[in-house]
Amino acid sequence: MILATSFFQDHHFIEALYIVAFALFIVGLRGLAGPRTAPAGNRLAAVGMLIALIATLLITHVIRTGGDVALMAVGIGVGTAVGIPAARSVRMTAMPQMVALFNGVGGGAVALIAWVEYRRRFPGAGGAHWDLKAEIPSLFAAIIGSISFWGSNIAFAKLQELLPGRPIQLPAQRFINGLLLLVAVVSAVILASGTHSQALFILGILAAAAVLGNMVVLPIGGADMPVVISLLNAFTGISAAMTGIALDNTALIVAGTLVGASGSILTNMMAVAMNRSVPAIVAGGFGGGGTTPAAAAGDEDRQVRATSADDVAIQLSYADRVVVVPGYGMAVAQAQHAVRELMDELETRGVNVDFAIHPVAGRMPGHMNVLLAEADVPYEKLKEMDEINPEFPQTDVSLVIGANDVTNPDARENEGSPIYGMPILDVDRSGQVIVLKRSMNTGFAGIDNPLFYNENTALLFGDAKESVSQVVAEVKELG
Image (cartoon, rainbow, N blue to C red; front, side, top):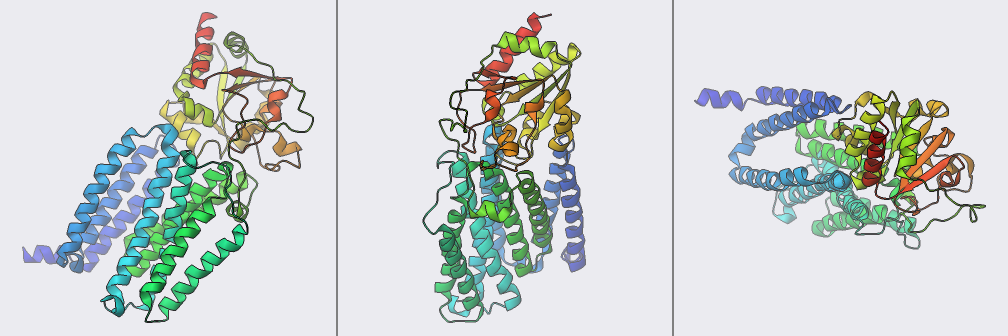
């Protein structure tokens, strides 16, 4: 029994378990590249995390500290009791909010760990000496983790419409942000120098970083929110990796690095897709879902052309090629299953149907992919922007479902537009464009879309799910 216990607590055995966990993390992350492999990837990563947790519990000083194990058990129990029901019951339209919340929890946990380590390590706080090689990364993690936690809460509030989606700025916003960052960094430097007023400066770090997290995200408009969620996710990963260095925990280092690296790459890719730099987004985004359209120059007297479900059904049924362009309106209406049914009906009539996916359509990275995968739309039918744009001139009908800003021609043609230069889906180059909208309200960027006034564009007003279902019924009537 003693030999068995000694074997399982052996340093090399624990490191071997960590290596197995890392391999599962990496393979699981690779599985997330597509909807078919994503469920298995998630399960593999979860098994890897379970193995990493077991390996951590086997560390001798963790086992001997019974209170830590009890706290871990309580934490796992509470997290399981809250997380599983929340994940199972959340609507797909609310998935971005949940992602923001869960990401924020990670950053908050890192900030709390820094506080606990401070309480344990500093002599003035009743603990032992805090070695600099652990203190410096821990203080860095406290700043980044706190920013991530509070920033994620603001992102959640904006997505949930508890706060306005438009940018909320104070006078001298950038100066205030810079001052808050300076306070946090200077407090960390003073604390690391061994000052006797430790409590004041650890609180200065956490408080300044908390306010900064709020102040950084408040000025960012709804149109930039997918990039912000990805950026905050990268922050959480980086802070976790720094905490791993401070605690000498290999699992945290590797897992945090994976999250931080993948989040950083995704943030950059999405910023490029919007033709915006990450610093420009953080400095203050645009948008906020205005309630009335702001007409572009020369559009004041132009009228949109409304259509009906039976007219749309005729156009779609007798087309050779149809491209569906999903957006947040499809998510809100939960219309993905009706869209899949429409695709099936059209394909039985010999119509070629594809889906055009913009990198920032929806409210989080991959939002449209997840929705369509839920409706069992074949993955090969989801075409990325660079792949589908050359095909729009040969497309008979483009069916736009709630995708406003990512189809706005002003991004190509109007140098005065806030989205000028952003790559868009070139639906206006299709033979005909049908747009499903509830009303003429603007999109999340808060700007009008000249596409709606084009001669080859018709608007079908109403709830997207009901509209698509009506079109499906009309297609079936055509026989």
